[in-house]
Length: 299
Image 1: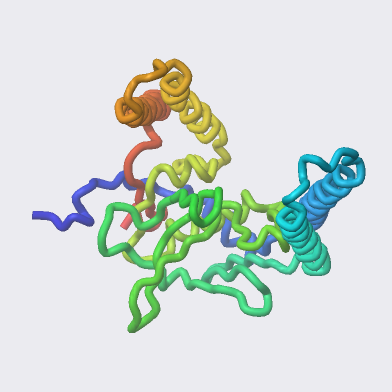
Image 2: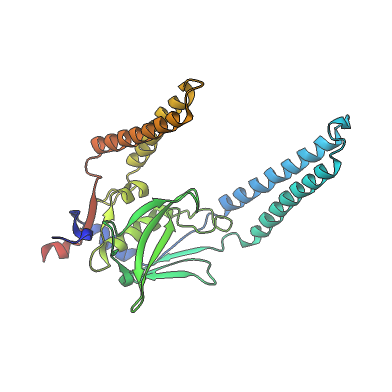
């Protein structure tokens, strides 16, 4: 009987030789921070908080009839001070970020990758990336709403003599949007990262097909492929329509438990419809992928 980690058959693809040659000739790849976009992002939040504070001050100044607050002056004063403190603290924090814009890095080369704060970057060597002990995918994407509203690229490394450590890197490849909102060459960086993961670790890694949908890369040619990701988002939004229909059309007075059960069924139906649609439209982007080089295929 095969171990659970080998129970799912992988589809083995050959990385085109010209893709590997271009990767080798490009040398180390450095992330190029979008300084203008990051400053606009921070400035927009500063303006938003400032407008909120100005609106509160204006509302207090223009208040003519104080009958609505009589007897609650102390509570309202404390709430107002707390709110102004939060807004002021937010503005102060954001203004402090301006001098640090651009202080984020990502470097990918033939040995590995380092990212994060240039003063104390995180690093991983390709030779230390390993297969997972439990599960079918060594490289996958996950969405964890408790961490951030972004998907993360997930894989594992094991340092010699140590335990495996999970690496969770945002697909945007930035770990602090207050310093670097995005890298201008993010597509090239993500492609290089996936190419190194696909060709350098031994034994070769198993990729969830969803990685390439989220990255917008064709796993056979390694060319840009944005359409599947757009269709996936559209079909996912369409899959939420049954849930919205339950909320809007549910009869008043019916037991709330039945409503919750119906919503769960609607979510499952929407997820199933999304999976069916993507399978029908992109049958080649399903399952598990492994990669080999042209030399490996010939041997």
